[in-house]
Image (cartoon, rainbow, N blue to C red; front, side):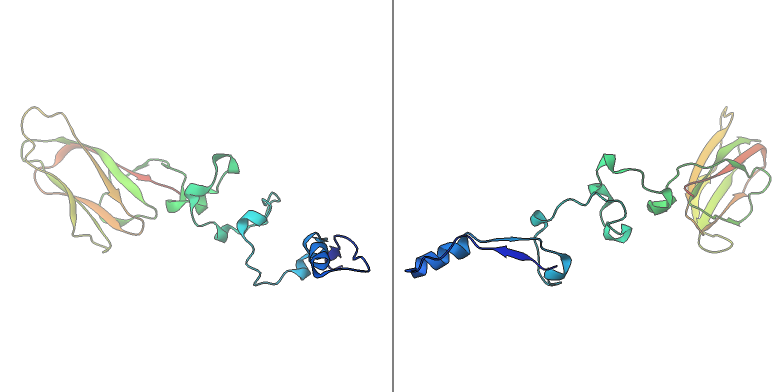
Length: 181
C-alpha cells in the first residue's frame, strides 16, 4: 500500500489560482509506509517516535554510555569498560611471587613483617615476562614497625613480581585480586 493523499477541498467551476493553492495547502498525507520513504530522506529526530520495542536498536549504535537513562535496564558486565564486575576472589600468592602474568586487570596487595631494618622489597610490573620496571619500593624499614602494607595495580596481560632485596621478611602475605571478568 502506498501513501494516501486526501485533498483539502473541491475546486469551484469558476476557480482562481488561489482556490487551487488552498486545496493543496489543506491536503493531508496518511498511511505512509516504509517503501514510501527514501533512504536519503534526512528526517529530523524530532519527527520520529520513540523506539519502545526491544531489540530495535543495535548495541553498536550506542556510543555514549553516559546518555543511557538510569531506568534503561542492566548493561551486561562484558559490555562495560574492563569487563565490569568489580573485585573477584582473593588468590593467595604468599608462596609464589616470582614473575607471573595477569589474566585480568588486578591488584597485588598484602603486608610484610620485616626481620630487621635491612628488610626491603621491590615490586615490578610491565609487559615483559620478567618485568624490570619498579612500581613500588619498600626499603630501610626502621623503628618499631609491625608490618608494612602495599598495593600495586597491574594491567591485564602485564607481568608482576616481588623481589626481596634486603633481609628476608618474617611474614610475607601477598594476594592477587582480579578486577572484572
